[in-house]
Length: 51
Length: 289
Image (cartoon, rainbow over all chains, first blue to last red; front, side):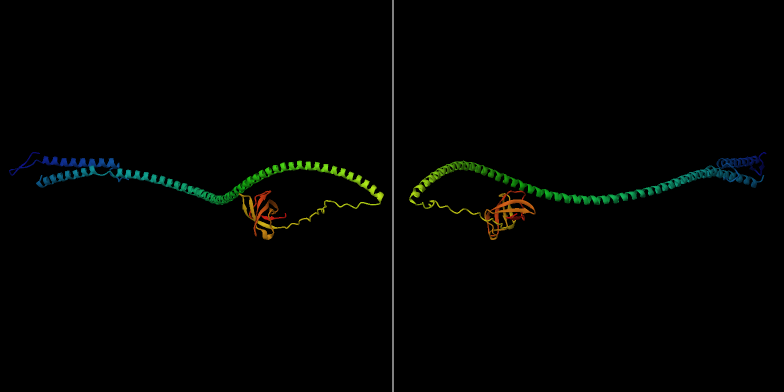
């Protein structure tokens, strides 16, 4: 997509927002992976309650 | 894409990153409760084992203490019995010690008396030896005197025999003269009157009647060992005279003789003689045994 000129103001292209969403997604993914790793290393399980 | 959508995307991204940061921070700094639990579990297990071991040790200690208490009780009983026995032995030993002390005192008193008696005996022996020496000297003098008197007696006997011989000669001459005178006077019918002796013959001595014992009795009232003199409790009022000899006795035992040389009205003093034992105050004295 290319930037759109509307009514004389500069508009941000949509690809930027797609990149922002990608960053947010990878941030969530990395956090989830870290939490899963920590849970597994500490309690040897991810979803069950450690006994 | 609308503006609102863009704003929401930006906000969503920002909050997402913020939330992810919070979660990552929390997870990174979260405490490992499982590890802590396992550590506490292991510690509790070790403490439990220690507790059991301590309980077992305590029970063993209690058991040993009870056994030790029983053993010590037996020892205490034995020691109490020993103590009682030792106390009885101590009492007996004290009694024996007191008896021994009494006997020692008695023996000491006896030894003291014996020493005094020995000293007295020694003094008496010395006096007796002196008396014996004096008597020996006197006996030697008497023997000399006796020898002289014996020699004189022999001379006198020889003189008497000579005089008797002369007497017999004179008697024979007298008899011959008497016969001649009788023959001469017979021729004239006369006789000779009986001549009177020139020396009057006195009466013959008669045997004196035996002296009966006056049987004076008294007691020894004082003793002077140094001078070997003894004072008796009878005197001239009882008939005691000088040169009297009293016999000192104790029971059936003869002690000594006492020759009186000084007499008062109620007492008399004499010297020791024929000492057989040490005289004591209170011994009986008598003229007859």
